Length: 176
Image (cartoon, rainbow, N blue to C red; front, top):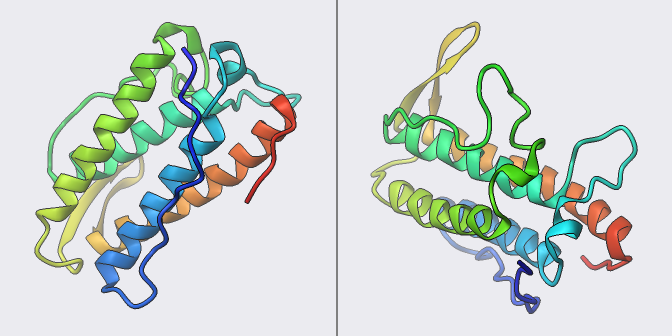
């Protein structure tokens, strides 16, 4: 599978929007940027791990960010108990490893579906001040929906930076 060439048509976060609109805008901007970084590449290129000593790949980033959105939106905000798609307790790095376990087209479709589901769940939240409990190995902690949205911005931003390096190493393509 080749992810269709993606025109650089990333939306911008509103410069004077509400807090929710601004945070959602940044999340979407980084989603669009990751899709752009993956566009035009075949399965082998998406699975490539060009950084010596690292298991990071563009396909792994898609898998990882699908898991991140599922965990925060579905499990923490919506209170569901979905099991991970790409990793287990016994194989916690499965989202970055064993990339041939799920076809690229299915990974990409799952990521796009999860975006819609996350947006739906977040759209149903009345206030960013609402609190949710997340489970940690060290116990439970309470976080606001605002904190979760800021964390999603941070998670995407960090990994889009990784995607910049990966794409340049794969085929030399650069861009903001």
